[in-house]
Image 1 (cartoon, rainbow, N blue to C red):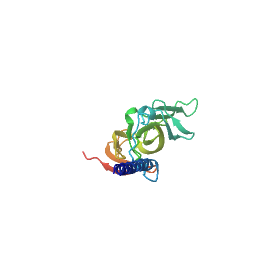
Image 2 (image 1 turned 135 degrees about the vertical axis):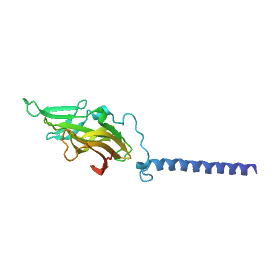
Image 3 (image 1 turned 180 degrees about the vertical axis):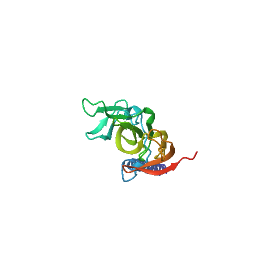
Image 4 (image 1 turned 60 degrees about the vertical axis):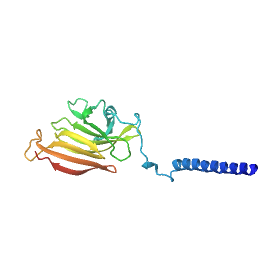
Length: 204
């Protein structure tokens, strides 16, 4: 009787051990096998090294300003004379206050929406909304959208991937120096394109 009970207890323990071993390996397989779980559904925790900073944005490379390719800002500033003896040239500026962060492409990484100002030496100052994606903690120029000549950006924010801009734009009859029409624009990324999804006048 004692031998039978001891044998039965041993068998029960063995079954429990085998059961827990299967649970353990099943759990490991569940997390490691790409077909067992779509890891893109898991939250991504950004470390400080992965997050973009305004300083990085102000020292990044930007496209679309030079036929030679990318230009690189230094502390938010770039200038190149048209010719060696020219008094004018291409000026590109990014101010720290014009850098805004938020997840723009739904990858759980904070990207940057940047207001970039540029001038070719004349009276015009052209503003663009530029998207800098977060690629493994490095800023990557994706695309930009023209906002106009001598507009005034009052405010900007990013919420749920939507960029909202409050700006003073030019009403009919306004001089280029003095925009008087307040509007709210909303933009959103669609693939690698920045799409304007709404535009409304502000009624005061």
